[in-house]
Length: 93
Image (tube, rainbow, N blue to C red; front, side, top):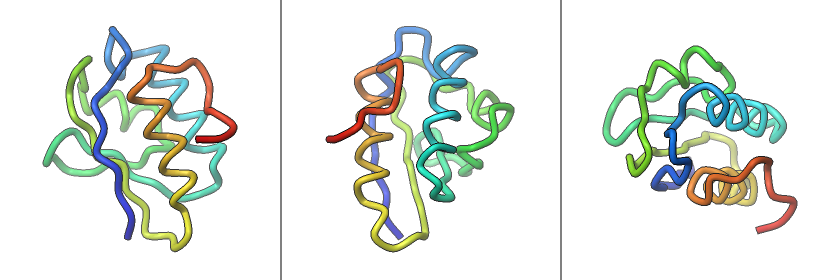
C-alpha cells in the first residue's frame, strides 16, 4: 500500500469543479485509489459523489491511497494536483 498526505490547495476545497477535476484525474491514472479526509473513512477517488461527500475544505488534509504496487508516480501526480490546486493532472512531478 502506498499513500500520500496532502493539504487541499483549491480555495473552494473539494467542491463542484475542483472535485470534478480531481475525479477525472484519479480516473485517468488507471489505478484504483481512495481518498479520505484526515483520519476519516476512505472513499473511491473515481466517484464524484463519494468525493463530494467528504466535505473537504481548503486547508484540510486528505490521504490518497492505493493498494497497487509501483503506483508512486500516479500518487505523486495526484498529490501535486490537490496541494497546488491545479486545473489538470501534471504530466511529470
